[in-house]
Length: 99
Image (cartoon, rainbow, N blue to C red; front, side, top):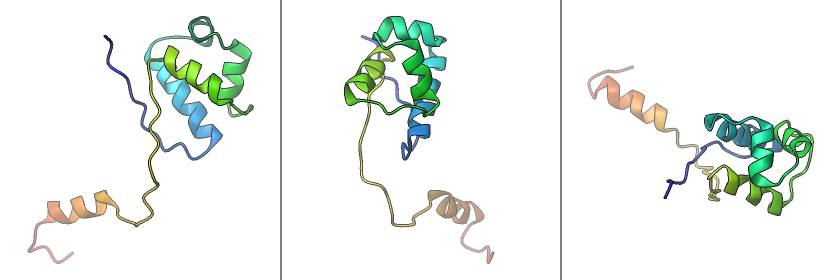
């Protein structure tokens, strides 16, 4: 069985969702026609979704995800302001670095 692939982008807009689907498709080396054949979603609709020109029904999204061998994870947005990069920078500097 092929492992489930994950495209990890914050999907906060139709444009980000379209970009995630496009990225997953391109990682497989497929054009839109190939994805259309495998998903049953028309090529014009795939184009519209990838460029955020169309609303996407849940059933259509599920067809695309299945064809792309991807899943969709939903989780709460982290609004704490915690930025891992800030903490990693401090760790890399060491405890004696005053900057």
